[in-house]
Image (cartoon, rainbow, N blue to C red):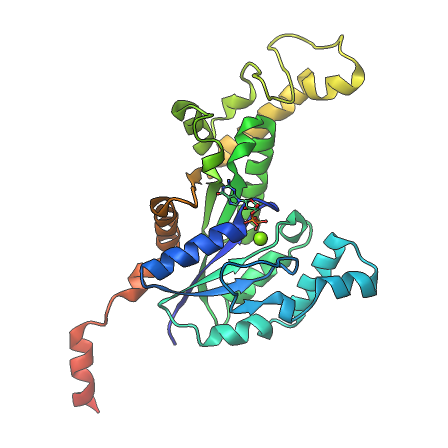
Length: 296
Ligand SMILES: Nc1nc2c(ncn2[C@@H]2O[C@H](COP(=O)(O)OP(=O)(O)O)[C@@H](O)[C@H]2O)c(=O)[nH]1
Ligand SMILES: [Mg+2]
């Protein structure tokens, strides 16, 4: 039985996951590589490339919401619980996917699926363990315009880290939509986000920041609502968050510009390395082939 290779594309809604999947598929095609595209977002409609497997053919989010009187998030959880009970819907088609293929799984953005209930971790276990034995890498996307708001950026970084710890598979973090911040952020400044510099949380506030903190100043005169985000306790929380990210020192980001073929290629090469794709593509040692007929 050969090995299988894949990537699961995650991140908040609107982070650019589906756009990245399409760009990746196009790039693989340009390089004469095969891929197998799985859509697991039951709310996704438009695809540049038609998925080979689409969760919508198993279960309809609309029907679930209507018949069970659930909201979109509850409905989504239900869809994934149903998927986990009917795993052969994705494992059967994967049986025949060979080692030259890159399996690409396009996920919905709801964070509940990764953290509140271990739905995605269980899905990943089903794919990476057992008979399928897919070598998998998580690609976690965060929008680059988050870096305009540092507290938001670090909260995004924390969710990336949380997903990473839950999945227990190789993980690459990707800062998507780099075209949106091009020219807005100095190169040196950007570097502090790519490899998160937690002192960013203590810097003097700049325009666009939602909170304000000054060293040694108890912002006590502010009214109560404000002081939640401007006071010493918020700063202390931020320092603790920064320390946590530092302690793990696991979170850094790859920059992604989907319009740029080289950028996609660079991200893909990180994914390939993480799943050891190329090692499996080596041709057999000629000696092995020559020995075979003599033995038989
Ligand atoms: N400017 C820009 N917009 C993007 C990029 N990637 C995605 N988008 C837009 O962001 C929105 C959400 O993208 P989508 O791929 O559907 O995000 P998903 O919810 O994570 O799958 C869409 O309107 C895309 O056109 C990008 O690299 N640059
Ligand atoms: Mg999508």
